[in-house]
Image (cartoon, rainbow, N blue to C red; front, side, top):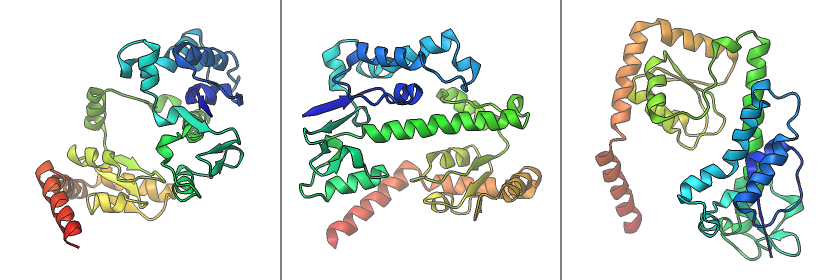
Length: 278
């Protein structure tokens, strides 16, 4: 039995580091970080290839887990591995006896289903999701850099702020300073930021997809597609039309109040009672 563990973000930066790694630990993550920053592609922005940025990338390979554990003790650290840190592969190259490592399903969901409904059903959380953490990390980094390059090509790099991770206080400040909240995601299970925007009475322009229309429920403009001209027109409308902004703010206050804790508790209890009575 082999448990492959690695730092997904370092793998993203390093590119094609495909050799199995065993029980990396704190120092192992630092080694992967060192290897990654030593081979950063020249196409990355200069600010990311600076010595300070490289040192921070190496440091962050272990810092998130070290903070979570609260100590640098290796044994304590290993007990805190999340399922995105590893994948458990048997000697035949299979995960959970059902999924071949060299023929992984396309998505996490398909992977989970293959394990749950395989010949020997197994909980995917018991064997890990490392390959998907790597792929998702890569896609996030690729998308972020593509956005930055696109903004640079349009001469807008100085007009936008790609904030990345922010503190709670900074997030509140962003909402307070904004004129509109735009959500064009392809995948949203519920989208808590929509409720945050409603709470701050910030007009919403969103793409109708997955749970977004149900979450908004009339408290924003929901578009049938992401056509740039349509999105731009909707943004212009909510920014310039004072009556529409006021109506959306009122709808947002009413909608967000439906998620107040007592109401959610009551609805949850009612749903449970109905399920048990069935």
